[in-house]
Length: 218
Ligand code: SAH
Image (tube, rainbow, N blue to C red; front, side, top):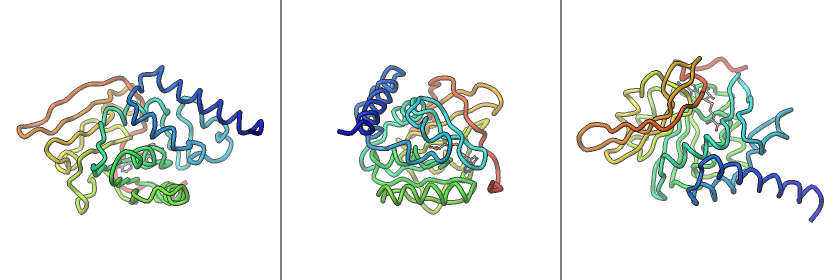
């Protein structure tokens, strides 16, 4: 092994160790995260910080989430191998890549066409063939692809958007941050039951806001 390879192996070990110490204990989630190289999803000056447990800036003023938060959200979503999953907030495409190792199909939506284009190119290049990307306002979900077994929202809304709840199957799970964008938000899990919805509050988080309409690409 070259020095570079052993440095990379060492950084990956530390990356997985950090996930475990922050509460990501589900074996399937850890295996999925081990398979996805976060470095593929970060460009420019921050690329060499890809294996640190911190959010990092991506294009259009957005952020790639902190890996431990990606892990905890994925774990809370309890994805099953036959599941059809929708993610709102593609960003870099990293979370979608992690989900693609756990689910049958992943549909991911972002309001920034540029982010969708760039994420699609990395997802294609890295062979994530069961992910489909969409440039759209995800607050309305994807009515043509609904219903979904699982929905993950990676931008904060004040309340769970009605159209997303409507596109969740009975027995399905949605995980999302709720609260004002400039304060600490709560990560919540919503289960859709035969009779109504069951809510669980998981932990405090901080996400960019879920905004209406299409974004101006920067
Ligand atoms: N999951 C991403 C990080 C998401 S950052 C990753 O793994 O890298 C949040 C993303 O939500 C941003 O890219 C932002 O453009 C997007 N977003 C915000 N409001 C949205 C909306 N209404 N519809 C779709 N995407 C939205």
